[in-house]
Image (cartoon, rainbow, N blue to C red; front, top):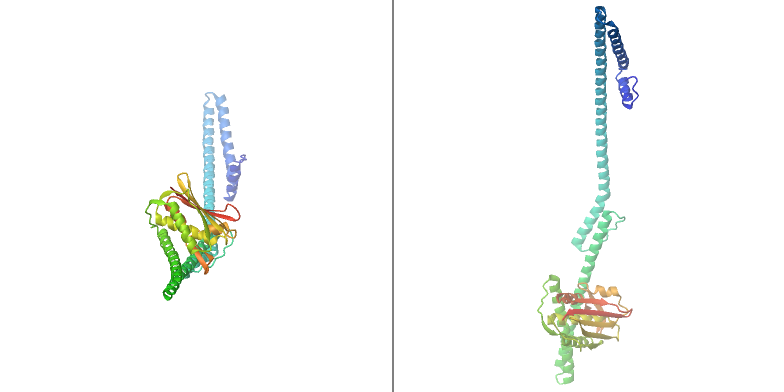
Amino acid sequence: MAENTSDDARLFHADLEQANRRELVTEEIGAINDVAGSLGRIETKLASAGSDGHVAASVENDARDLRTALRRLLRVQVAFVRIENAAIERRSGETYRWMWVIGILGLLGSFARGLHVHHAIAPRIQRLVQQVQRFKELGVHQRVLEQGRDEIAILANAIDAGLAAIAAQERERERFLAIVAHELKTPMTSILGFTELALSRPESAEVRARALGLVRSHASRLGRLIDDLLLAASTRSGTLPFRPQSVDAAGVTKKVAAEVATTMPGRSFDVDVTRGGYLIADEHLLTQAIWTLLTYAAAIAETGCVISVRLEPAGARLRLEVAFDAPSVPAQEMERAFAPFASVEYEGGSGIRSAVGLFLCREIARVHGGSLLAMNPTDVQRMLILDLPA
């Protein structure tokens, strides 16, 4: 041990110093020297003694000295083992205590960190909960401004966007119902007024014919609006009726165009349905879709613009194109018309009027296995394309 220079030996020397047993190294050296001396004397005597009895007795004495030295060396080694075991136990205990200290510190640090995170996150979560609860109770959306890019901010922005969309849809629905109430009231008022006019002057056939014509026009518009509401409600509930049969698409298009021209006298239509044919469709739904399409086009078209209506086959399908000029209507505004409860206001013959959006028209096209597209061929021209299987 005295001559060993390894890292383990130096560590063991430190353990001997801590145990105040440094003398064991000296004892080990003395025991090793005694063993070496006894072995040397025995080897020398055995090599030169022969059968001399005196030499044999001397060798026996040296053997006893050897056993004594070996026992002494063994005691030293056992002492070394005990000291090392004690050192290992001591270091293990210290490691165990340090692990406890580190574990407790880690637990306290985690608790403190969790408490810090709780104080940082809980108020933000509470604001989101209050926002949703307020919207649920009052229907009022008040935006919660959350800065940053963490998950709470992302969630808050998503909730804000969702509630804002719901609030906008609710406002659009209220606006739509108000417009519908106005539109339902206007034809009824006109019908009553023209009826009284016809009754007050029964002798005038011209007045009676004009009054009856206006009554028919307003009654037709009133019926279309009611149908549009009922079909839109059926579409939203997933119960839109569909009764397919062979329908003369050209005849329906001409009839609806004439009806819309009557109810909107300030608009003119250029109808070309000579190449149109028959298709399998629900005639009532198809009529309502074309009426909605032409009414919307007439509502947003530029004043004095002639609305072009073309019906032509495209392979195994029929394609209805409605083209008009509307430079003041951006593409985004046309896309908004496809939302449920969308409507558009326009200047009618008796002031501000309104037309329903294209949501129902697109749903009717979908039920028939077709599509409705809004296009902007030029900066001025707008086009609505109803594509249906023939």
